[in-house]
Length: 447
Image 1 (cartoon, rainbow, N blue to C red):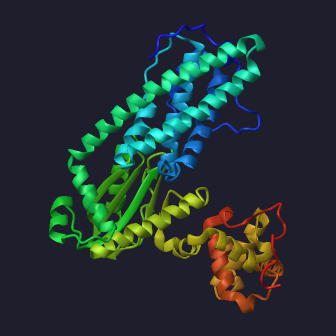
Image 2 (image 1 turned 60 degrees about the vertical axis):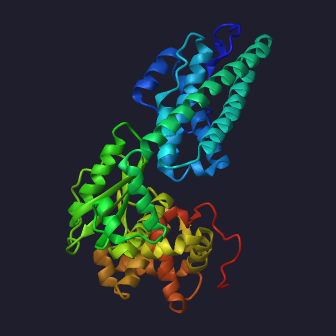
Image 3 (image 1 turned 90 degrees about the vertical axis):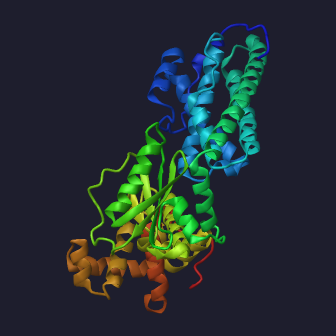
C-alpha cells in the first residue's frame, strides 16, 4: 500500500443511486454485509453497488468467458464483484474503513481453483473489473461531485482503486494457490481426475476406477447434475446431500458425488432395480437448487452417456428456467434438447412450422397446448377436452383457430408441427417470437 495524502471522505458517494431504468435484483451478498453497508453509506449507494456489481460480472464473462459457465457460476462471480464494489464505496466514504478483502470475493476465488481455471484467467478478470469499476466511479463522480472537487476526487478514485486492486490481486493469488494445494493433496483430486478421464473417453481400468471411486463403474448408472442459482454458506453441503438422497429415492443402492465448484455437483447412482414408477414428489429441495437427470445407461460408456444426457437436460433448464420445475429428466425433454443444439436454427424451424402460432403470448400458448394434446391423442376431441378440463366445442374452436394461424396445411407437415409444438412446450420464450413482433423477418418457407 502506498503512503499518500487522503483528502477525506467523498461526499458524492452518499448521493449514489441506481439508474431508474434498471430493475433492481436481489443482492448477491449476505444480509449482514448489506445491512452493514446500508448503515454506513445508505440504501441508494448500496443499490448502485448491486447494479454495478452485476455489470462488472457481465463484463468479466464477456472478456474472460471461461469464468462463466452458467447461472450458478455467474451468481458466485456476481457475489464477488458486488462485494468488491461495496468495499470500494466504503473506502471512498470513509478513509478509515476496513481494507480487508471481502470474504464473498474469496469464495469465488476458491471456486475458480476447484474448477481448475488458470490463475492467469482469474487475474485477467480482476484487471477487467478494475477498469470497469474505475470507469463507473469516474462517471458517477463527474455527475455528482462539485466541479471544483472533481479533479481531486478523480485522483482519489484512481489512487484508491490502484491500491485496493493491487492488494486484492495479491490476496486472491495467495488464496487461489492455497485452495489449489488443498485440492491436490486431498483424495478429491484423484477421484476427479478419474471421473474426468472416463467422461473424456480415455482408457480406464474398471477395477482401479471402482476401488478409487468406491463405486461400481460397470453397473447401471443414473447421472444427475445439481446446481444452485444463489450460492449461500450452506449451499455445498446441502447440494451434495440432496443429490445423493434423490438418487437413493430413485432406487440407487450406492452413489458417487463429485463437487465441481461451490454451486455445482455431479453425481451418479448405481441402479440395481427399475426406477420407481412414481418419482419422489414431496422431497424438500434446498432453496434455489435445480436437478437435471440423465437416462439410465450401462457400464463405463453409460457412465459418460448418462452424464451427457444430464448436461443436455441442464441446458434446457438454462434456456427456460421459468418453464421447468426443480427437477428435469432427460427422457422428458430429449427431443427439444436435440433440436436446441442449434438454437437459432430451432427458432427458424419453429417460426416456419407454426407461423403466427409461434408468437409468445398467453392466447397462442393456449392454442398451442390444445393443438398439441389434440394431435397426441390421435385427433380425439374428447380426449383433449378431458385433459384440458374444457368442453369439446372449446377444443374444436381452438384447434380450428390454431390451424388458421399455422399458415399452411397441417396434414402435409404433421411430424414437423408436432416437433415444433414440443419444442415450444419445453423451451417457451427461448424459441418463440415476442408478441409485439407479429411477422417473420423472412416469410415462412411454406409461403
